[in-house]
Length: 109
Image (cartoon, rainbow, N blue to C red; front, side):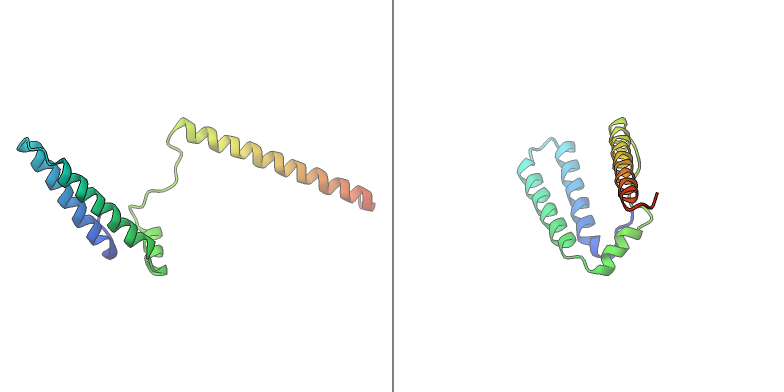
């Protein structure tokens, strides 16, 4: 996925981190401290960038073609969706009953 302009520092750090991890594996070297420091720097960079987005940058993220879309991917999320729909239906039915009772009191029904 091609990063947006303001995401380039994140992409560069991720690439460096992957190289560092690959080097540690291929050469069988313990670089856990370096990896930890790089992950911390990456996390701080992400926070700094995404906490200070301009309105236009937020639009760019929302419209990005490779953006992860909301989809039901697991049985758990399907159950949550169904439960939400059941609750929403119960709320609507309750509101309709309240409105119809109000109309009966006012003599509109």
